[in-house]
Amino acid sequence: DLVVDTLTLEDGKTYYQLDSTKLIDLLKDNSDSHRRIIRFINHEVLSLTEEPVADLDIGFSSVALDERKEDGALVVSLPAGSIGLFFNKAVPPMITKIKETSPLLYSGLQVGMCVDTLTIAATGEIHYHLEAKEFISHLKQYRDLDGGRIVRFIQNNMPVSNPR
Image 1 (cartoon, rainbow, N blue to C red):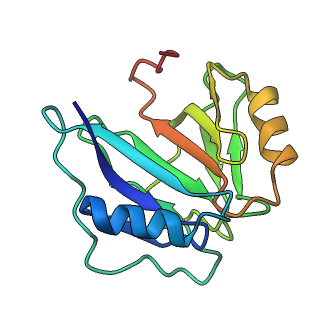
Image 2: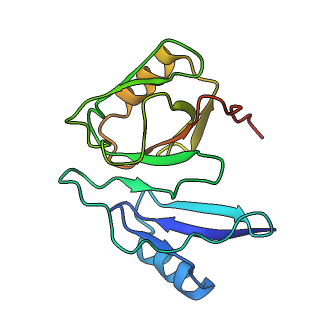
């Protein structure tokens, strides 16, 4: 059975371990938002995400992070604009360089991590098995969405996800 793990609102604020009343209230209060992200998990397989002790403040637009998964994956909600990452042309695209000015510098991403999926919050589309050109094209197309481009990065020795 799936349960709600987290709710991330358009302003980047993430709510954890919500009861149904609080979840419904937050969804109603933000019903005009186009970027409400609910993370569902199978509670029999994963534990609920605990609220971090402090938000990550790196002086850029908010960077919403899922905690690093046991398998080494990292889910990052990208800020608007340039993300300061360089990728190779492999499938999946692999990070080859992280600029010192990247808003993702302290996100936990590392050179060698690969793009697993790209979710466009505005459309609900989830892209799998992206070529580097296609991935970059989607990032540029939606560059003005602050938090609306959600990327699941994986270690380069992990299998990529497949559509369900």
